[in-house]
Image 1: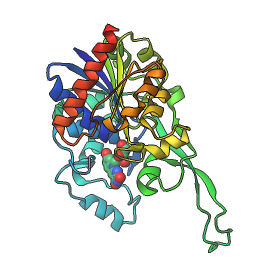
Image 2 (image 1 turned 60 degrees about the horizontal axis):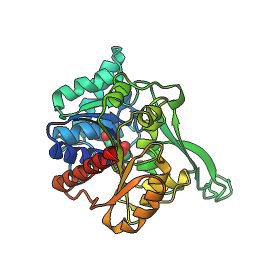
Image 3 (image 1 turned 90 degrees about the vertical axis):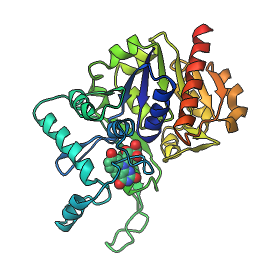
Image 4 (image 1 turned 135 degrees about the vertical axis):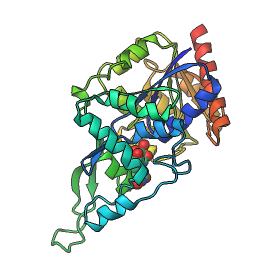
Length: 331
Ligand code: FO1
């Protein structure tokens, strides 16, 4: 069975680990989000691609969900000693090697898709990981930062509106100020990476894991041609809600959902994707009361446990998603 999965970071990666266990013989292609990418210290860092690669390759820091296991931070400490920032993004020594190899290959003229394939040669994730695009796309967030404290003479609370890089919003600001707009800069001019549209066209089923619907899956769908290819694929498209009991299971999805006017509920996220895209939607058992509303939106819906407490739990979720896909296919 050929499965295509649109994946962001931690939630997507953990779901994929379950999917691999549920259907070990399936041919899985992951279309990875690159909107989180950031250029630091002259290096290109691809957090979501690396999270999938490390998680499925066995190198992830399990409890953090990102970065390498058994990490040290000597390079980071030395950079700080030189007063070279930013200090708010925790890049470890082992992780730096990935960004050095990636940047070296990009500078030699290899596209990001070829670089990702080369990095995966080492990690053997057991899936084909393709960036959504080889073109540069970076998600920026419009915010109003609280005004100065008057120390510089500006009126306190004057509020300075600016666009910050997604990682600065997510990691330095901890999403502590409302996201007023989310813009995947460069998406309009970008093309799907080689293999993306072909994988979608050849898929037997397409899955939206519990990744962030705005800055992860939403960003992948913003690459011209990808949303249309999925809508036209003619195979079941099934998603799993990242929102359980009106709150995101992890991260701060509710903050970015508000930016696009979507309430933080399992049903609202399904409606946000729309029946033009989604054929089926899994909500957690605590949201069983919302099944009717999702079905009224023209999307088949089932309530099943959606907490990925371990790989077996994620595998059960994957099986439920595939079963719903078969039910939809037969409809
Ligand atoms: N997330 C954090 O909350 N704090 C960090 O210092 C941090 C560093 C980091 C370094 C490499 C990497 O691949 C991911 C990293 N992340 C960090 C996670 C990153 O912000 C992800 O993009 C988000 O978790 C969303 O997927």
